[in-house]
Amino acid sequence: MSLFKKVDELRSEFKQALASSPALSDLERIRQDYLGRKGVINDLFKKIREVEAERRGEFGELINQLKLDVHDRIENVIETHRAEKIAKSSVDVTLPGVIYQRGSLHPIEQTMRDMKKLFHRLGFSVAEGPEIETQWRNFDALNFPPEHPARDMQDTFFVQNGSVLRTHTSPVQIRLMLEEQPPIRSIMPGRVYRNEAIDAGHYCLFHQIEGLYVDENVTLGELKATLELFCREYFGEDVKLRFRPSFFPFTEPSNEVDVSCFLCSGKGCRVCKQTGWLEIGGCGMVDPNVFDAVSYDSEKYTGYAFGMGVERIAMLKYGIHDIRQFFENDVRFLKQF
Image (cartoon, rainbow, N blue to C red; front, side):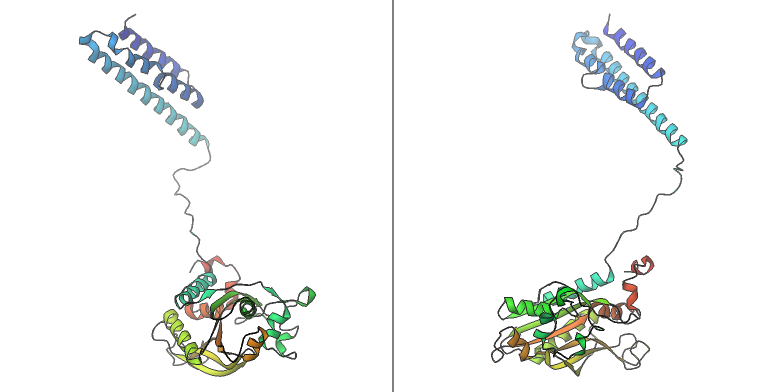
């Protein structure tokens, strides 16, 4: 049999194989039989040298055409199978595709990250600690007297063995000073818990970022400069700061820190209660009694500490008036950030 007749026979055999309406699995077998490395068409290419020299070009063209025909016919049958399968299904392929919305960081997490980045640029490291603390680290070492109201059941969540859910991240400061010697420059971010009535401005858990700097000759002026730089970087260059005398057991002197209301530019509005100022946190110089509790030489070292509520900062920045929105997981609220 001549090789030219062999090509015609293969073409006829292929047509018969497709005429039986093979399944998709059979089509793959047919593809390999004809187009695979060990397929019959590849064998024909190897026999081109057996054809007379003057007809080799004609024979090669004939094989190439057979190869293209086999490939195209198989693809057409596969496409027909797919179309039939889609037609039998209940899926309307003409409908637009489903748009999957991308997630984003929770506004509290985003605010904490932004604040940590700013303090990192100011040379502060990050220290963390457990949320269940001893009363000594949460109160005693921080110079809270035994009769202080913060120790009452109505203000603090008590757990087994007399431990408490920390009411601030200050216990991390105590842990850090017990483990390291000055100089210390660190911030303490994390969740804290207070047994408070829940309303638009209060929640039973929230997040804080506290800061501590201890070294020789640390001054109140350095504390003010640090907070001023943070506020201008975070809220904008036009923001103004106000330090009001206050009292905290663990700092002396102590101050409350206010920023000018950026909703009314300090003129007075409902958010700032017509004062033109918004409170963002507290600060002060570390009380010598705190240094005594961690065996620091209070004659040699001084330091400052500050604390800010992350929810408070986020509410001020984004104009949010109800702290409860942070914890309700309402997608309509969260997708704005």
